[in-house]
Length: 332
Image (cartoon, rainbow, N blue to C red; front, side, top):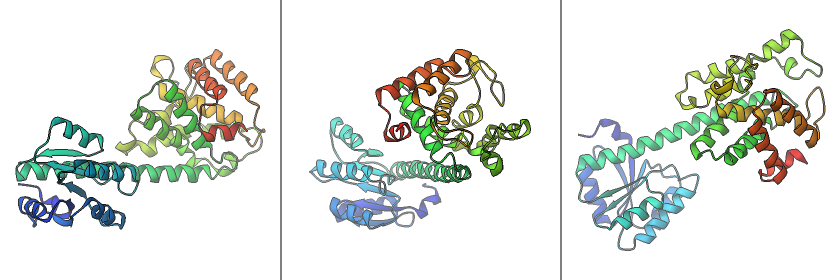
């Protein structure tokens, strides 16, 4: 028996009318609601017009390639990429199933199948899509908050985006995987979120900060960590936010973490953050030339304040001009 949470799920069935009716009878109209699309073009039109669909069920005809192209099109468009695409194949070689998954399908189910298996696999695809959607929504909210906080400081406009750009470029050069790069980018975007508690007059002070003012600023990694603490979505990001001011030699803050206990990602964001601070205008000084930035970063690496391998990687990226346009914009 399929759980009653399925009552709210609406399926768009791409098949001929007889196949769509058989599918509806198998799953039960009291549990699911349906729309029918007789052709790939009709399905695409309905989705583009904003039909609310929790899953697209595709029972292809003889020309599988046409349905595969529809799937590719849907997965490449922001508005429809989140809709789970589930193929039902009455027959087909293993090569057909490979093509289906290569086209971006979320599942491929062989027919005949039972009502319960079909319903549960459709629900699983819907839940996965909802989880991704929730993650994107949470990321958008937190990123908007980070940008709002950045807006408090008139001298750091674009800072978090630039730091994220440098960090990801470093991560790519160090052969990090796609999931690690996503975490690294999120951590770089959110690294200063704890500055929400720092008064504007301190953030925008043109002169040197007093000891007490600096102590207020130094609390922001812990504040950022606490903001994200209750959100499982950002579990992998929290160490970056908390430790981006830590140093390999153990003299950083807030925890004095160093050596092998200091993970790679906070080290990367620390170098990217430092480089952007040097190469951008600040209340207390104008931006520094690239050669001077390099000298300061390399001196920091010699002291153990920064990871020397990461400094070398960033300087190589800058020298080769391989970072994206945001990097070039900063250096011009």
